[in-house]
Image 1 (tube, rainbow, N blue to C red):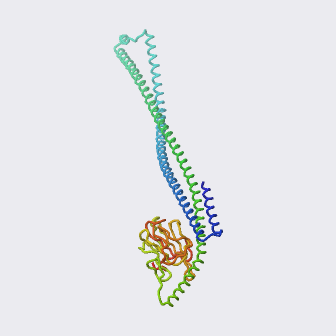
Image 2: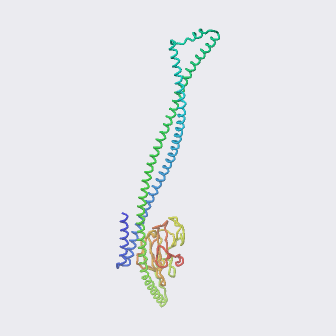
Image 3: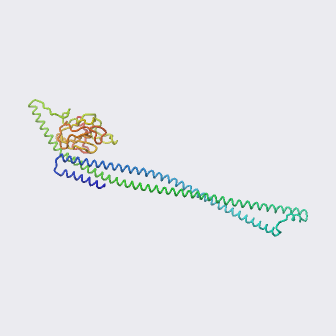
Length: 436
């Protein structure tokens, strides 16, 4: 579709070229130029609007990408924090494993001690069984041969009884300690493994979220790339439109040059008529009014094009719409809508119609003492002349308005030495020539 628009623009240029090559009336030629210029301006406006829409979409996607990247960064921080926790748990597990290894040594010693006691107890039981099922400590005491032997036997019996009691107590305590240590180690390790698994699950969830966010970023970046490609195509079309527009501008200038010769001839005719009229007046010694359509026409070659307040002068200024400092190539005269606009000098209308930010505009080609000048009257509410028409200084040609790039009713008046150009040094301060 974008390429199709290029062919349309090229066909427009071809049409204009044909208009200049074919033998046609001057007014028809300028009318064709006006129509083609209007079509190009409309096309440029449409392309500008589409490019603006693409920029909005690109900026919107960029904003979404930025938000997603912030979320991904947040996920990265959470993942890093989780990895830190996993590392800490792994270190705790490693420490617990070390403690378990140490406890295993302690447990092994306890188990060995318990086993030795078990063997000792089993020996005691076998000794008891061998003696008839019980040990009669009283018989041992009564079997003493003397008091000293009795004392020795009594001490031995006490020692044996205390040893048996301590053995049983130690055996019970060691078995309980063994069970407690085993349970403590197993519980601690189980809890650590559980914490580790929870962290691993959390990290897996965060990784999955990160993958999903990354996919969204990829989609948005692909969309941005697509929009940029579409924008590039539109800008290429806009470039072509500008090229055609410049070509039309060149043709308008060429047409103005052609009309300049007509303006010279018209100026020469009016000089001859004026000389003849003056001779007749001198002969009759009377005055003959020219019936000017303007209430006050200055003497000389130029007159003011409108009445009103001077709102903006020639030179650099901050543009009231764009806010950008740029050259102002004319003089602005503000007044109410419909205020009459007059031709600043004798000449031929070289353009009358709509042109870009000028809005409704009239261009008049003048010839003064062999020098060509062009005056421009922009932002008009209505146009009262047509291309190729000869006009007199002070003739009513239009009405003031606010068409095109304007913030209020006013006349934007330009004065060019030579033919009009949208750029270049041809525009000069109107004050140098026109009694505004």
